[in-house]
Image 1: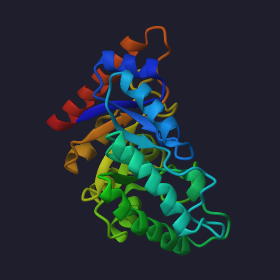
Image 2: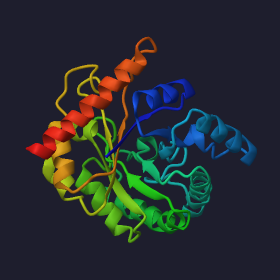
Image 3: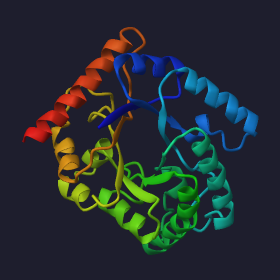
Image 4: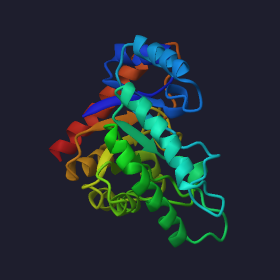
Length: 266
């Protein structure tokens, strides 16, 4: 497996490189700058690359103002135009994965039927999946905890929508924090194994990097191993403070490697 942290801070990225991480996960707004001119994107990309780690994933795909479900959903043409810019710039940055969490853009208003939301969401994935594929980018639909978003909550739900898109460029993400908050078991990850393309994790209950508070990651890694997943795993949670950050990041990495080793030996 390859391990990373989520960060847009060059100093934090440099520290994670020193600690032994493999890549960094940036955010679409900070890295891609989809509403800004090309030269602004090029300048930002240069600063990321100077930090010394490859960028292999990016999150926060849709801003909340670009609604994709509900009665005020944006037209597919508008969403596709935005997605084309994002995918093209991700390809220029050699970023192969974009995470489609974006709870604010997909949260359902009261009374909006889930079946109608599914139609809207699948139509969007079917429209932008080929665009992503053309640029060598894959879309990882991220299920979110029910307390944070009322639409697409379990890993198997995300996988079902990815399949319904008909696009091989659309997959699903398993996030340990959301998975645990929802009370999911290994079965939802196993049911998604054919579409599982990315993973996030953080501790419960405080959503921190491993090692900051006690948390057993072995069940999550056991589910990933059972699903045949051996790809990227990104820490998406609070990181150690600047003083002692490199040592804290090394502890986080050691914790994850130990949890995976325990899962493999179980």
